Image 1: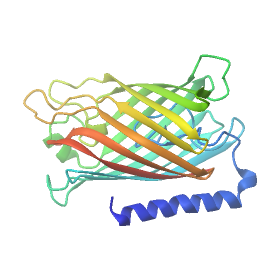
Image 2: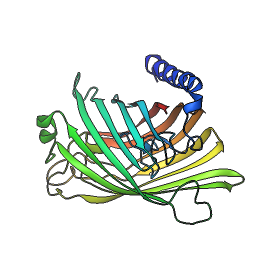
Image 3: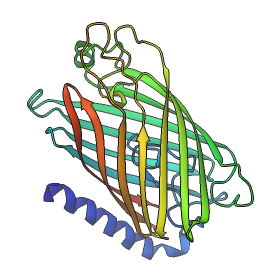
Length: 294
């Protein structure tokens, strides 16, 4: 990863920790890291998948929030930058937004695809952390509205629309001391979507204009209270390979480490495999995300 990308993210994490030390008396009451990091569409959770938990450090009688920047560069020359923020209201409601910029490399030199994502998540039952005497996980429902700026480009690639809404249900559970004394977190998401490449290549395709059910999952082990090792998997629809279109789409997965050096900041490093992306196969590379939380 280029130094000019890595250094600002490390600095952001350090600044977040510094600010948290100066406002420690106002810090939220939740256990460190249980709000997760920032998912690529802005929701609180893992990097690829949302969790049922609500972003920010605030507990049930507090508000919180987060801001993040993310970078992913693939071996094929694609370059993705994301910036966003989210607000958690009394550990029950989450409102989020994210801005994507995806450089197409040598596929279309000098061209980027830009996308906005606005999301909402609502906790409906359970507590992922404190319901240790119950098998029931924390349950949340969410929606994400996505809008691609370049309508002509996504239509030329075979997509039906440049905007759409994903809806999802997610269940998350943390087992304190669940594996050799280490905390274990598992999360599963069922998403109704017709997004192509998360929405960057529009929505729907030839003969595939319906929302389909896609499954996502995240598993993490807290090697320490501030250090999480895990993996994620996210299914994606394959709308643009039929009806004469040739843009095959594969599921995505990652292996990640997340470090929470303080309540106010986190850094996530992952190896992400996106599969085929806009005619380039086996697109994978390093993912780095820095988050500031309150």
